[in-house]
Structure formats: C-alpha cells, structure tokens
Length: 79
Image (cartoon, rainbow, N blue to C red; front, side, top):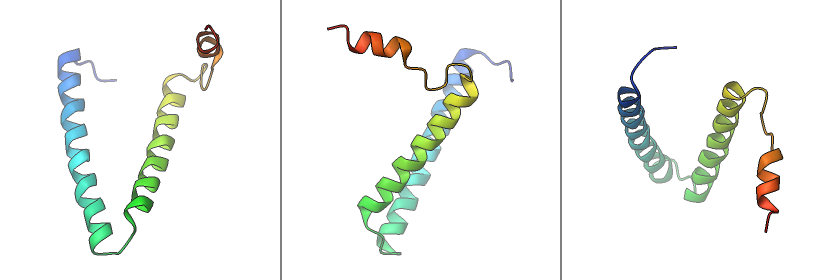
C-alpha cells in the first residue's frame, strides 16, 4: 500500500467522502425528480449496497475474524 502519513490519509478520506456525498445527493435528486422513483426506494437500495460494500471491506481487511462475534457477545450479555 501507499506509505502516507495519517494526517494526509485522513484528509484524502475526508475529501473523497465529501465528493461521494455530493455525487450521491445529486444522483438521488435526479432519480426522484426526473425518473419518478420513490425516495424510500432510493434510500433502501443505497443502504443495501452500502452494507454490502462495508461487509466486503471487513472481509478483505479482517479475513480471519470476518463476522466473528465472540468478544461482542460477551460484552452484550454482561449486564
């Protein structure tokens, strides 16, 4: 991977997130106003694919512990 400082990496991620946020807003507005899609459908599809992308990122980053809930279960039922 690229060897960049944490501050530059953070700035790059913030800029990328801002650009994608703006593109998504314009795209959603276009789909709702010009194509007649219901807003709830657009939001549902967006959340579905965001979940898939996050699961794929989790898989590629933490291959051995993918969807491992061992520690989380212990903390959940601690009360």
